[in-house]
Length: 426
Ligand SMILES: Cc1cc2nc3c(=O)[nH]c(=O)nc-3n(C[C@H](O)[C@H](O)[C@H](O)COP(=O)(O)OP(=O)(O)OC[C@H]3O[C@@H](n4cnc5c(N)ncnc54)[C@H](O)[C@@H]3O)c2cc1C
Image 1 (cartoon, rainbow, N blue to C red):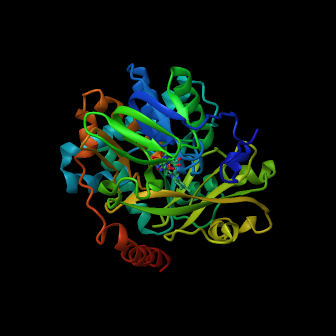
Image 2: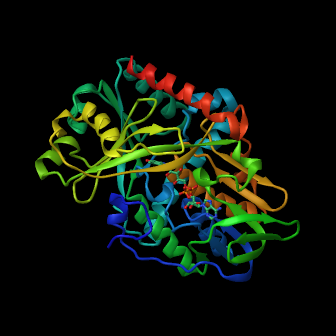
Image 3: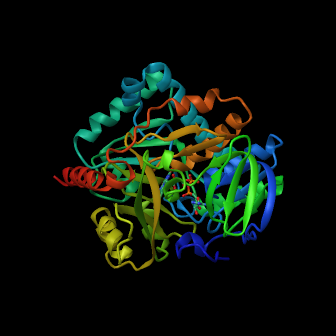
C-alpha cells in the first residue's frame, strides 16, 4: 500500500494502513495534549482515552514518521542495561521493579497487537550473538543470574555450533536465545496503535508542529495555525525534541542509526541464515541487528553517526557491517537504505519526569524503545490521572545532563563512542 510523507524505507513501502489526519486549525480545548505521534505519544493517547480523558495528539510530520516508523523491530525483555549493573547502581529493590516493568512492557506490546488486531508480522524470539570467546562465559552468567534472582526461565544458552546453525553465520562464538522477546514490523505496529487510538476517540493532527507551550493551571500549546488549551501536556518527541523543551533537552543526545533491506532472498538462502525466523543482534558496542521481512528480505541494521546529517550513501555504510556477518550475501542487491534518529541518555536508561506546570515526559530509551515507549504511554496515563507509583519507578532513575549540555555534548560523546567502537574491533 505504501505511505506518503514517511522517509523512503522498506517499512513505508509495505505500510498496510492509509491513515491521514488534517493539521490543527484554530483553538481547541482538551484534557491532555500529547506532542509526538510515535509509540510514546500513541500509547499515552490510547491509554488516556481509555481512562476517559479528552485527548488531542499533535504530530509535526506523519504518525510514525520518527524512530517508531523506522527501527529494527526488536522488542527485547528487561531494560537497556543489564540487571546486574542496575542492581549495583540502584539497589536490588529498584532493579527488581525495573525488571518487572521490562517484562510487562513486552507483554503490553503483545496484548495491544492482539486486542487491536494489529497486523505487524509479530513473531517470538531474539537471538543474542557473541563475537568474542568471553561472550560465552558472560552469557552463561547472565542466564544463571536471571534464573536465580528473577525466576526468568525463557532465556537459554546457545553453544557455538547451534548459534551458527540458527544464524547461518560463521563468525559467532556463542549465543543467548530469549524466547520471551518479540520482533515486528515497526511502522505497521505504530499505525495500528494510531488506528486504535483514533477509534477510541483521540483527536489527531498531522503536519502540526508544536512551536511552544506555556501556562500554569492550563497549558496553551501553539502550532503555526492553531492552539490547544489543555490541563496537561505529554511530551513524546524523543530524538526529535530539538529545542522545544530546554529543561529536558540536556538529558538526551540525539544519534542516528541506519538500516538496509536486501532484495527478497530465495527460500533456501533465507532458511540458511534464519531458519526459525528469529530477531538477531550481536554483542558489538554499536549493535548490529537483523531479521527477515515477510517477503524474505534481510532487514539489517548497523552503524550509527552522531552528526546532524546522515551519510550520503547509507546502503554502502550499512552493507559492510552485513558482509562481515554474511559474506555469502556479497552478490545480493540492496533495495532500501534509511536512517532514523533516537535519543540516548548518559547512563542509557530512559528519562521520565514531570515539569512545572503539568508537563509529563518520557524519552531517551537508548535503543530499547519499542517496549519501553509503549509502556511509557501507559505509565504516563497513570501519572496524569494521579497514580504515579509506577511512573515514579522510572522517574527515580537518575538521568544526569550530558556534560556541556546541549551545546557541547557532541564532541565528548563522539570521542567516547568512537573509542568504544574501536575497542570492539581490536
Ligand atoms: C534505526 C533505528 C533502529 C532502532 N531499533 C530499535 C529496535 O530494534 N528495538 C527497539 O526497542 N528500539 C529501537 N530503536 C529505538 C526506537 O525506535 C525508539 O526508542 C522509539 O521509537 C521511540 O518512540 P517515541 O514515540 O518516543 O519517538 P519517535 O517515534 O521518534 O516519535 C517522536 C515524534 O515526535 C514528533 N515531534 C517532534 N517534535 C515535535 C513537535 N515540536 N511538535 C509535534 N511533533 C513533534 C516527531 O515528528 C516524531 O514523529 C531504533 C531507533 C532507530 C532510529
